[in-house]
Structures are given as C-alpha cells and as structure tokens.
Image (tube, rainbow over all chains, first blue to last red; front, side, top):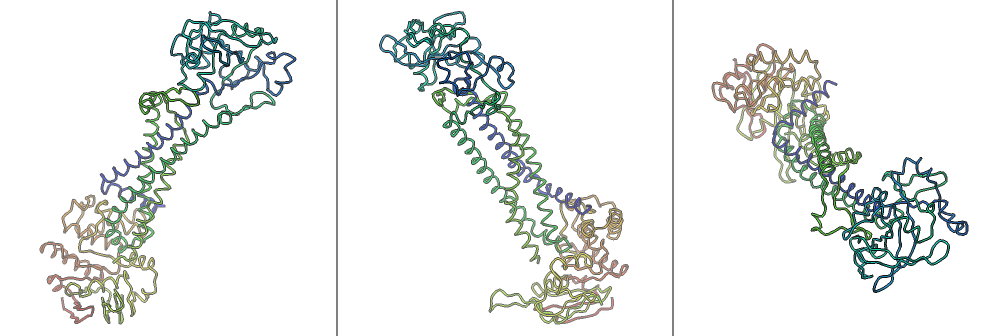
Length: 402
Length: 229
C-alpha cells in the first residue's frame, strides 16, 4: 500500500515538472470534454425543442374519441378507437393539458374558388394554453373567445381563395344528421406555418360555431390531450396503448436520429483530434525524459514501475481535466438553458420549416445526465489508446538502458 | 570476494562484417572495501566494463559473478532488483529527479526497497549527515550547487547501505575544489564503512588517491597498478 501511495505521490509531482505544458494539456482535454458534453446536450435539446414545438402545433397531440361523439349508427366504424371519459382525463397524471375540439372535412368557398379543408372548432382560451397555434398568426388576430362564426385560415389557403382579413367565406359540409351544413364565416386571422402544405389545408373556428355548423350537440366533441414529453408510449387507460411520435412521424424521427448520430460522430472526431494532439505531447514529454527513465532503471526502478508511474501521471491529469471538463459542460449547458440559443443566426434569419410547420428558433439546452459519464469514459478509452505507443517506446528504452 | 569478471567479452554487432569489442577478455576481481578506478581515454571501454559490473548489459561470452551469484543467468527484472539490493550509483551529471527535494531523491531507492517510513527517515538523515548536507534536505536540485547535487547523488547511492558504489566520471563536471571534496568524501566512506568503490575517471587527483588502477584500452585491461595510499 505504501509503495502504491509513493507511486501516486511520485506521479502527481511529475505533473509539476513543466507546469505550463501540464496546464495546456489539462485545458485542451477539459475544453474538449466540456465542448462535447455541451454539443451533445445541444443536439439532444434541439431535437427535444423541435419536437416539443412540433407536437404543440399539430402532430403529437392525441385525439381520444369521446364515447358520446359518434352516434349509434356510426359506432361500429369507430370501435377500434380506444375511448376514455372526461373523468379518466382528470385522473390521469400523464396528461398535462386537454381541450375540446370538433373536427370535420368541409369545403370553403371564396371569391375565386372552393377548396376542401379540415375545419377544426377550438375552445379558444384552453387552446392557447395547450398549443402555440396562436403564435402562428402573422396577419389579423386569433379567434375571439366571445366571438362567433369567426375563421382563421392558412396564409396559402387565403391566397388561393383570394380572401382578405374581414371578408367572409362560405363553409359547406355534412352535418352529423346527414343534412347539408353551410354558413358564412368571417376571416379574422391568417396562419403562417412557413409555407408548408398545412397552410393550404387547415382552418379553425370557435368550438360552438363548429358544433352549430355540424349540428353537434354540446356534449359531442373530440378531447384533445397532450402529454409530458417523457410519457411517450405509456398506456393511458386499461387495455389501451399510446403510439409514439416516432411511429406517427417516422420521417421527423429519422431526421432527429440522424442529427443525434451525426453529433456523436463529430464528437468522436473531436476526441480523436484531441487525442492525437495529446499523444504527440505525451511522446515529446516521455522522450525528453528517456535519460531519466534510464537512470531510474539503473538505480533500481523496474520497467513496470516506471510504466505504472507514467500511466498514473496521465490518469491523474486526465481525471483533473475531465472533472473540469464535465463542470465546464454543465455550466455552459446551464447558461444556454437560461439564455437559449437563437438558431436563426445560423439560417440567416430564414424560418426553419419541418413537416410544414415553422419551428421556434430558440433552443433551450437541457442537461442529459448520462453524457457526464459517457463522454469522460470515451476520452479515457482514447487516452489509453493514445498512451500505448509512447509507453512501448519507454519500455523498449528502459530495457536497453545503456 | 565480491565481484568477478572472468574472460568477459562484449561484442557490439552493427553488421555481419562490423563487430566492435566493447570489452575484450576482461578479468577483474573486486574485493570487499576495494577502491578501484578504471582509467582510459574516451571510447576505451571504461563505461562498458562498469555497465557489465552493474548488470546493465550482459557479456557476449564470459562469466560475471557477484557473491557467488551468476548475474548472466538473471532476467532483466532480477538484475534490476540485484542492483537495487547491492549497488549504489553516482553519475557524472548527478541524475537527480528535479521534481523531488534532496531528501526525497535520497528516499527514492529506499521506497523502491520497501523500507518503513521510520527507517527511511533515519536513513535519509544519516546519508545527509555523511555527505555534509544537513539542513539542505528540503531544497530542490535546482536550488543546489553542482557539488551539492553530487553529494545528494552520493547520499542516494549510500542510503540503502549497498555493498558497492559504481561511479561514472563522478568529478568530471565539478571544479577542482569541489572535486577534491568529493574525492575526500569517497575515501571517507570507503574507510569508515568498508564500501567498495569502482569508478571510471580521467581525474589525476582521483587516480592518485586510488589503491587499484586499471588502465583500459580498446576494451582490454592493458595495465593494473596497486598504490599504497
């Protein structure tokens, strides 16, 4: 034990042999480690933020059919939907927010033409809390909670219909009783989704206006619920299952997976570059001390002892550097958590559009705990590889001491 | 008898046609308490013979024995341990570890030997007293003069109480006054503790103080002389 403690002390002292060089090595390792941790956190948070944004606007909200929504004649058709009641919603901790909606395919007629769209009736105030839909209004205003028969259209849809804010459009569809539903709605706002297909196919009105148009009684609606990000795939009610967004939006999932994997590849390249630089410095350090290793061997230090002291020296240095690196990574991540990065800086101010949706450009960075041990472990592994050649040289030289 | 080199040859082969004798038919017997110098011009083979005695290199042919043990049959690690147990070394350029203080440099081989803390402390103190460096143990090598550094090197060599001290040109880097002090120290240690000294040197003052002088030329012992000192 004393021998090992002495070895530790000896190796530790060697770090102060050329302090500037040690500091530079520690700095390069810790900055590399800190940057990789931050970069991985950034990539992960970017995906998370994009998905959060995406889900909040459209895709990831789960429509659970209220049992009363469909009447007896249509029931068989919708039997494969799992249902839950308002009571279930209240009791389920996984559901963060819910709101009622009524959805129907309709035709909207403007001055020039008639187009088929999906009309959605919203609970205005609840919808604002649940989604960021209202933030996509770039012209006009969102629906008035006290108003009636107001409509907001996708910007492209309005262009194709050739309608302006304040003008009226005719909405024609089929009511639940089979009769023709038609009414005039006043355009109050235009939605800007960044020019995607959704801009052409969506229209929104107040819930009660949609119910009135479709002859739906007040107790008939879709319950639109959203979940915590981390509750993906968890069963909500007995004998039911939840489909993950990765299954619903495979193309987005693939993009995000690609970004994540690419970030790991970039991290690996950084580690290799840092390791090669360190290997060079270690070689210089070890070779400068070859005469000393020879003397140590002459006065009785075995080759294994000399090798062990060098390994411990690098291990101590790496441990100090990686602890600093992990802290740097944590501080940088925390800083950009409170001061999110605006990625519009990287797109020249142009909006980021995914799947027809404009993505919020602010990336708030979150820490992923496993990166704080995965990254240092990866660097340790590369350091061991890095040391192999210099150590073989030392062993050979010590064996041919004179 | 401590050391015996019998019919030792050391051949360095750079190619099939180019063979150089570092040592040729060397026969040396070293008795306990011997004070012996290897003298000769540069490249004559002095250092090769010292390295053979230390077991740092092995003879191509011949026998190398210490206290009845055949050094040539030992493995590399066994020879390293053998040096640690029985030999002390003094180098021309001191070879002190810059990261350790004088005391810690002296402590180094004792730590390798696995002595207890108390014993190490006592031996380091004893060695510092022997070389006249009491009170300077906490200084780093760069804070010491050349002569003081060589004294630390000698203290490191004697602290483990070896049977034999091997020194390669120990006074070559020192001024004449300091060299004389070091020679005096060697003689004192030889006299007081019956320590065997073998060293290579050019220094005539040192040669004049030596009992046995072996003149080395082209790897061979060309002449040996015993002085009555």
